[in-house]
Image 1 (cartoon, rainbow, N blue to C red):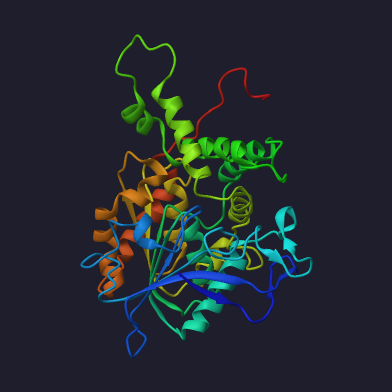
Image 2 (cartoon, helix red, strand yellow):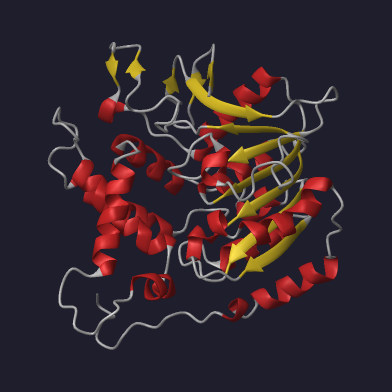
Length: 370
């Protein structure tokens, strides 16, 4: 892990500023003499700058993210507990950790930190950018704000604007955290119970009915308690508690809610039209958190975009798991050999008129007032 301390105060979108900002980052491979072999990887909510840890199926010799051929950069997003300035960092104004006074961050603020790292590394052109979920949000924001930086991009299971559905899931998780009376106290493992509950809520959005049916179904009809699914939820909650910080979770989930490419740009359609990179947009049929309609919107309005949908039983988490299919689809974009099918883009617009085959779920009788 490497660290960059930004020399100047980082002005945030809300008008506040952070001083002595640190960005943790990892690089792999060697930058070519022409500096034309850069891949920038963007991690999701609770991941880190060590790409090989969370995308091992895509990273390595002979794979899509090949350090033998490319100079690969992954920066820990601002606000995360894996190397960058966050709520546990020391506030220069007080000499104490920021804690609950850590400023509100947006995805645009995170991209500003990336841009400082870009300048530090002497990079003026990025051959290929790739990111899923919140990582995809950062990549899109950067591709809009600096349209000529990326030659090609791949965004997976992400969107142009965080949805009311996604915000509601995040707020439910924050409510669970804030219901923990130890939060913001000096207690050992302060906020841990709330974070575990929040992760259990999040898992329901990352997976889906079929995922749990396939992996957590009981072997016997005689089970009356101690269910696999219940144990799994508690296991996932504790697993996150053991490796992540509750204050970073609050910071990052709020930043995700802020994601809106159209803010101050005349709407998301105009913002997406600014992207000059060839874009591979990947959606997952079973993703209930970022449904494929959101990826279709991206593909319709990015001028040089192609939409691909993956079948996966893993729901939203499929972007971390279906690496063979992702690698196959992304390789031509990375190598610059893809030709965008304009007729396919037209068909996509036609499909959008009927909602891509998805029907809205009607309210159950008697629940309308709820």
